[in-house]
Image (cartoon, rainbow, N blue to C red; front, side, top):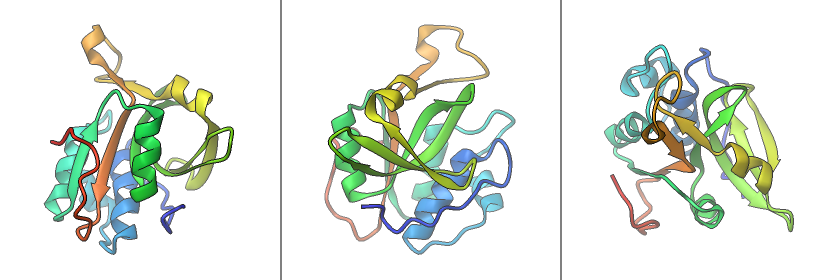
Length: 167
């Protein structure tokens, strides 16, 4: 299931977070410019935080939460219900993309990548190796590490609770 997500390329090098959120909001019928989302996500010179993406989604009336230390199964469960923003390491820096499908016996993940404006596929082991990020320009302590983060933005009509950890 790919959730009929329209892939929208990011407009600036550092705006993958707002661009990922924009794709999900558009899927739910809320069309917002990336410029507006850059402000709502409090984008700065190194990007934005997952917490800011959650707050931006909530400001449009959507239920949203992030979860760290997710398992592959957590990701599969959520992607069956909703497109999911994933925070991962790509091309030497943290990056947000939208997970839209997991399929096959080899467990392939399909993501909508705003950096290139295309879908990409990764095998589970390849993705698990890069499903991390860190706070700031570089990690200074282990507490700066962000492991296996996903951000869920639920359509307003969805009433079911999915994971127990909410913001």
